[in-house]
Length: 211
Image 1: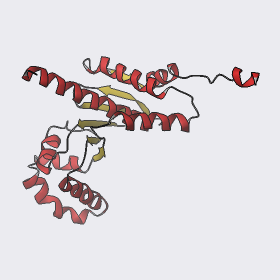
Image 2: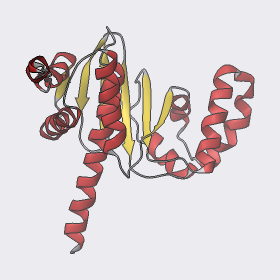
Image 3: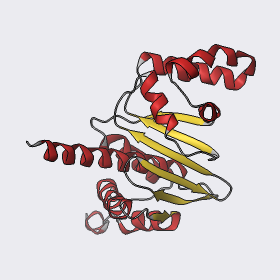
Image 4: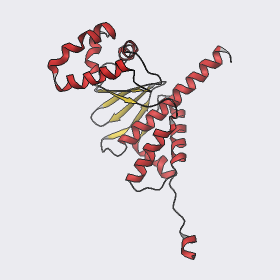
């Protein structure tokens, strides 16, 4: 495979991982009264749009080091209310950092323990340090990645007592996101629910009635 072909294949894998992560995110919030929809903004980026706030989301299909996580944070947009970073896994150092962040959020006096990590190990720009306290982190595996998304859809359908073809719903959402991602497209909550509605099915009881 030529280098150009390899780059295209890697890009396709990255986009697919983004779409699966986007499905995971929207299925979590689709029933929230203030959730308006999702805006796809190119490779690795999307925004969850709510009535009162927005969540900027970054998707990475790798397990970054502390320094690599710093590079991600330094590229996040400023002045967002909240941030969510999807990673395919957690290295021990990043896992430890996330645990320390949770402690500091509950006990600001522990902030000093993170200062060296932010400035030395992550090389964060000064204005980016506050972003770390607005970040949530979520693991979405890059292998077998369709399974968690299928699980999210199935869980939502069960909770709402809706019979839908889970695989067809996943494929329809993937196709929708694929079409819109190159256009910075916005998908409303209503449109997301319409996709699910189009993949509903009604169990056939006629055969049971005849027995």
